[in-house]
Image (cartoon, rainbow, N blue to C red; front, side):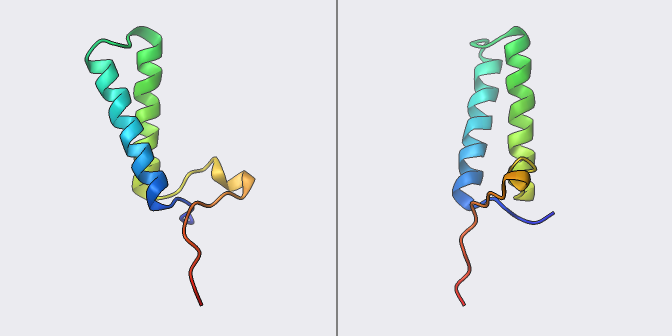
Length: 69
C-alpha cells in the first residue's frame, strides 16, 4: 500500500483515538456508541501506524508532503 498520510494527519488520528478510548473507559460514552467509538479508535491507530488510509485512495487524496526535486 502506498503511503498517503502525512504526519499531522497521523497525530490527529492518534489524539482522536486516545479521546475515544478515554471517553469509553470513563463511562462517558457507553453502549453501542461506545463500542463504535472503540472500533473507530482501533481503525485510526491502525491506519496511522501503516501511514495509509484506504478511504483516501478512491478520492485520490494525499496528506503527505510533496518531495522537492
